[in-house]
Amino acid sequence: MISNQYHALDRALVLDGMGYVCTTATTLDTTVKETKPVLGEDNKPKRDANGKVLEELGPFVKKAKTAIGTWADAEPGEDATKRRFLKQLNRIEKSAIEYGVDQDENNLGVGIITSKSGIVVLDLDAGKVPDVNDLNHNMDAEAAHDLLLERLLKVAGISNADLDSWINQFRQLVHVRTPSGGWHYYFRRQLGQKPRTHTGLISHVDIRAGFKNDEGDWESSGLAYAPGNVTAKGEYIIFQVDVDGHPSRLKSLPPVNDLPFLPEKINSLFERSTTEIREIAHAMAIPVPKTNERYFRLRDKTFSRSMVDTDADLSKWDVLAREFVQKAFELRGGSHEC
Image 1 (cartoon, rainbow, N blue to C red):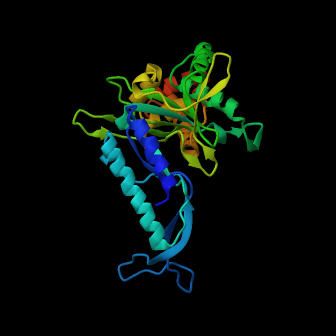
Image 2: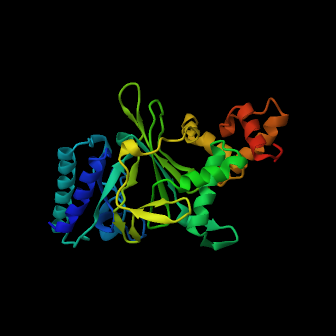
């Protein structure tokens, strides 16, 4: 076993002592064996007598940032963390021997389980926001950070007059900067809050969280890549910015109990479904994930009909209540006639 692999275990044990529940995750490219369909002479997949596509082992491929293990079985405590990491280290070593593949020395990283840690991680993917003036390039990450945060705060109901104050407060929080130009903000879940993971809440914004329901089962979860992890693009680094805007690199995250509470305005988003949140964002001309764009174009046409025809059949597009739709158009500041 390569000794450097144990660096991940050391970092996980430090985080465990601060209240974070950790699991294992790959961070650098990990070579794995994939399957591919068996092709016939007509270049179409062959099938067996039951119609199932026949498969064979394909080439080795490289995958990065792949979570391994299961978050549901993860528990806090030094002994439990050691067992999880040693099990995965042995699996990686066995896989390398079986396939005859040299594994990267640091390909085992640390994932923080947000639900069981009692935290919420706001993920702003600021390094991948297209520049509206030049779609062939992305925006500067700092400018994109402010833009994404502004969009999220607007959807959460923050007024335009208060946006600058909120953004400045966020900037001074301890956060993790990712190799791709993203920002991870860590918050503590307040008693009674029920945050859940939203992937693609609006374009380039994710929230990773979960909570335990009244039956004692975990509702949702989310994996945050821990600071100190290294990918092919670089390292996850902890920063804090002072009042003058100067960032300083920190050695570790604060203990969970020292994290700021999740602002109630952000928590209010969890009272709505992802669809509702995207409805509000769309009505405010805030970009939503591409998979929703055509859907919303159809919705807009349905909205305009529904406002003038009280008997319009809205079931085709699963449109929300008429009052909500009207409110969404009011938030955009325009007419509901599309």
